[in-house]
Image (cartoon, rainbow, N blue to C red):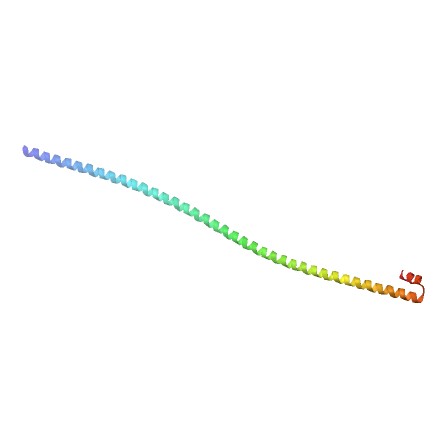
Length: 149
């Protein structure tokens, strides 16, 4: 009977140790499951964060691309306008040169007209003198004045 009690006691202790071990293993398993779940949630959150960053980076790249395109367009427009300004400056310079040449020609022509007018007046004076002298040789001063009219 004593032996049976010892065996029962030993089996009971073994059972209790096994139950403790099952409890410990179950606790460890549950802890591991929770840790895995936490890791899974962290991974999902990190994955979502990475996705958001990637979307933000793509938007940034798109904005930079648009900005670069606008910059190129503005540089092209600036170059075109600079070319037009240079062309207009050239035209203006040419027009100014033509104006100066025209003004010089006008001055030369005015001088020539003044010279011709002076020569015509001098010639007219000579003609008048000759007519008066001729009339005076051939007649009276009255006839000379009449001949001038």
